[in-house]
Length: 245
Image 1: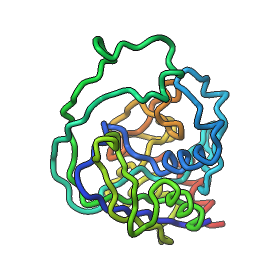
Image 2: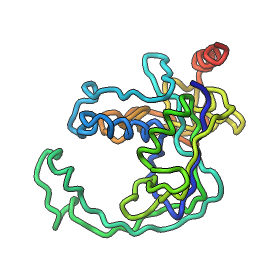
Image 3: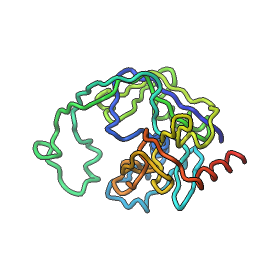
């Protein structure tokens, strides 16, 4: 395993709904496609019973917790505000996972047309530490060929937002710590990490630190992506020891 950089270019606006798109979450989705028993996980399941996916990434264990060494999506190019219109309609496959009946004609679960804030972006990039070959293989399962993909990123994919026009997965030159924090930009966090791993953070939010990121019972106090923070000395020491090996 070694440093890996994934890049993608987008055709138009994308919606992230305030939740960063973590690379290990995308790779967990590819693993779930290959292992349907994991794909049947619902919001009612106890996180302790959910099988941990086997990902082509290095796993970092520290202070009683662990993460996969991969960043969330980072802006790669220009950005401008935009709007996306989206029809909110529940997937038919999701009905058997719900705790009770749903009324799609009235109430909070009804089908509606939403106007959502979006971003026009040139593209995104992810920093990771893992296997280039296996990461490329998993992303190809999700997105198709690098030069003519059929995939999308973000939370409004069914509305056509976040459509990919090309992507790449190449060997990088960064250290392990750069998957977590941008050391050259006043310590800006590049992914969710447990708050206890930080000596200080500009902003703390509730979020998951590993997949499934969407599960309501995996949420904990994390440093917010894009916020300035300081990693604990013991964590930096552990990452430095790994790089020295």
